[in-house]
Image 1 (cartoon, helix red, strand yellow):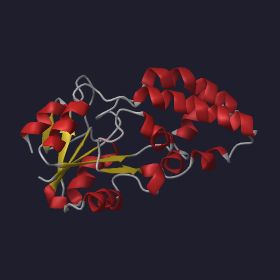
Image 2 (image 1 turned 45 degrees about the horizontal axis):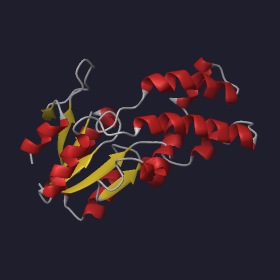
Image 3 (image 1 turned 30 degrees about the horizontal axis):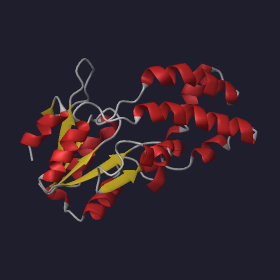
Image 4 (image 1 turned 45 degrees about the vertical axis):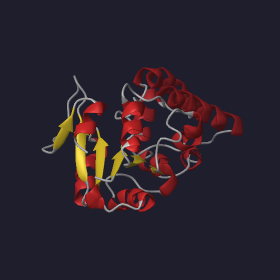
Length: 209
């Protein structure tokens, strides 16, 4: 292996579900929706739009004042900022991979608040390639999003490993383009089906490369 590419949410960072649950009703109210209507639209028709382009394109579907739109964006940013912290062992594992001469990358399905906040986080500078779905207009498991990271790393797929929790069919997508995929198991949670390599903690990855 010459490169290891990581998923972000629920792999090297934890999405702050509790904080988002508290903020979600306020975001729904700003948009003129009930919490139920908001969940249906946010995780349904708006999911692809907010993960492959500017959130402003989503908010344009609502009759919002500039002040209300900025309020929605700041509520979301505040939650995202809480989550953009390396989980135990993540930064150390990535640093060790780099010290061994491997290149490191990131491919994440995310809203634009992630790349906007990225430079403020402890993740900044850990990766040789970073691909954010909202910036490139692609989501996993589209083969093109893996190709973008591989091109940045200048490494062929057969010499690269992808590590993630398995959401968005990301592991199968990685293997379809020729990468070796590794599932990070999440204790106590139902795992998507996977017959390939597995680890239970990120430092275990060091024995696979």
